[in-house]
Every structure is written in structure tokens, then in C-alpha cells.
Image (cartoon, rainbow, N blue to C red):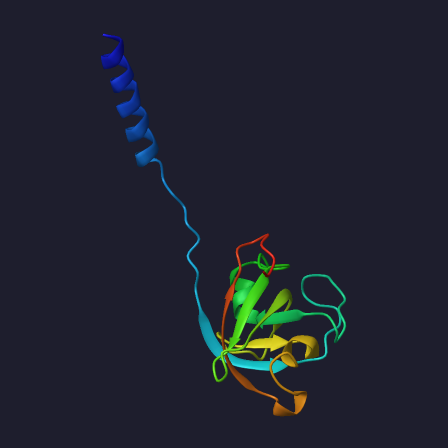
Length: 133
């Protein structure tokens, strides 16, 4: 009798756990242009300098998320070379298209000299609270 009760309890627990909703954060990879800008006071309320590894995301994305991506790290890949760099979201970019990023000189120069001006990039947000490796 004890084995039957134990088996029933185990099956009930498995069914309960397997029916619980699982929320996985879906990673969305964006593609667009990478440009650079001289940072200052950003939409997220921080003042940054050219030497800080910061990113301005498209204003449309910033507004759609209500600024919830502030202080979230971004993984950026130069699609021409495969080189990867990271930047912290602290601002929005009014002139950026939906897949574009504006980078501080510190981040942009991780890919190329400022004279290059524009890069082809892909990028995605790291999970909130996660820092670059």
C-alpha cells in the first residue's frame, strides 16, 4: 500500500510540474547599421562619456519597451568580420532604424576607426541582469 501511495504522489508531482507554464525569454537578433555618437545625458538618466561602453537603441524600440531596456547589455557582431563587442543600453537614438544601434566611440572603435562611420551589424540583448562574458 505504501508503494502505491508513493507512486501516486510521484505521478501527481510530475504532472503538476509538467503542466506549469514555462516562460523562456526569446532571443531576438536584429540586423542593421552601427554608427557612433558623442554621449552625454541619455534617456536612461545617466551621463556618459566617449570612453564608456554605451549604446543608444532605436527610439521606436525604447518607446515600445517603455525604457525597460535601460542598463541592459547588448551583444554586437560586425557581420563583415565576425568580431564581437558589448555595450550597455543607456540612451535612445531618434534617427536609428529598427535594427540600428548608435555606439559610443569606445564601442565603435572596438570594431573600426571612427572614420569608417557605418558598420553592418547584428545584435541582441543579453538577459536582464546578465553581464558580458
